[in-house]
Image (cartoon, rainbow, N blue to C red; front, side):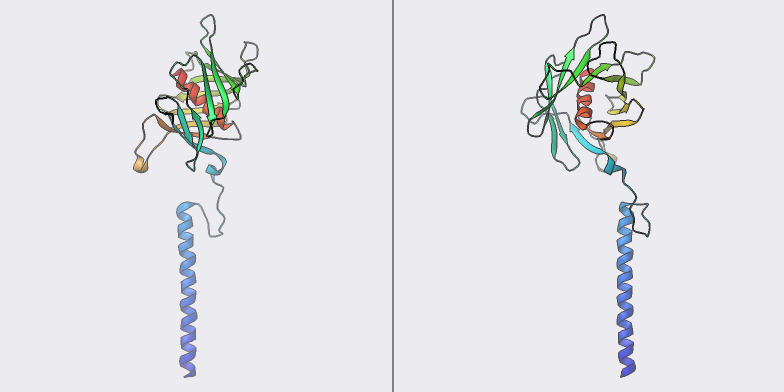
Length: 229
């Protein structure tokens, strides 16, 4: 009887150990599916996605019969909107937050002597102050990769240090915004559904590196690329 009792206890302990080992293995398997490079130490390698902001841009206003943009963050929350947008807009374009507060005002400035147009970006709804950004379409035929240059303040021909340079193809929704040290600040990418099915060009991703550019500035550059091209 004593031997039978000991055998049963040993069997129970053995089964419990097998159950715990199976649980640890299943837990690790789930982790490696999410983090393929995770090791048995349990440490998860730094995720690049934690250092960037991925937004979905929809070229459509939420207001009926009005052109614009609607922008959602990675959680699906509304973050930016443009409701007064028109092709070739001669007035001001307002980039607003989800509540309709104006964050940036974009105005077009005609240039003389065939130098092309300049777009100025102001904080809030103020257009009498010094603009924060000046954006100019690239006319350099020897650098067809470059779409536009971004400088600080109002470009007057004397202070033209480039803050950002935009390269790629906006029509294909493949653009990169590079800072003055050629570091990636933001990207425009095609958005894909499951199984590699791509959306149309009216829905795309804006991936921002917040350490290199403000997210509202990045969205303002999207609006300006749409004006230019």
